Structures are given as C-alpha cells and as structure tokens.
Length: 62
Ligand SMILES: [Zn+2]
Image (cartoon, rainbow, N blue to C red; front, side, top):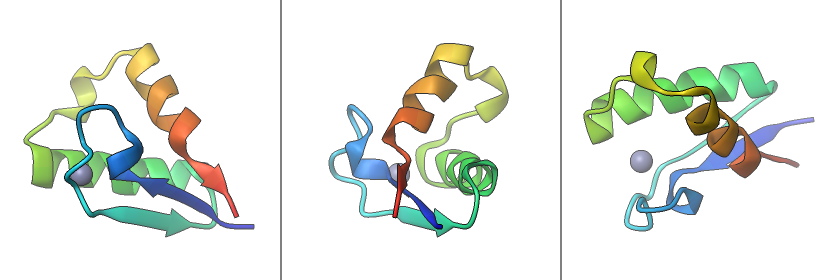
C-alpha cells in the first residue's frame, strides 16, 4: 500500500505541482511538512489539529 498527497488538492494550493507518495501516512506527513516549509514558507509547528486533519483527508491510499 502506498499513500499519496497532492498539494494542489489543498484549498488555495491549486497552482502547486508537488505530490508525495510514501509507504505510510506518517511518512507522507513528514514530506508535506518539509514541503510546506520549503515551498510555501509555512511553519508546520504552528499547524492546528484541524489543519492536520485537512491534510490527512487529502492523502489517498493507492
Ligand atoms: Zn505545495
């Protein structure tokens, strides 16, 4: 099983071409955090529980 996150599926990120696939949701989350920091200038430590839930909802199993 692999899990994929596509940044453009997140509201407001429609222009972002990045996507990440990994073996576990936890690993995908780490890629998303690094990407959000590097590409979008965000601080994942400031994300609320609902921000994380929204990211996890977009991660699809494939
Ligand atoms: Zn992005």
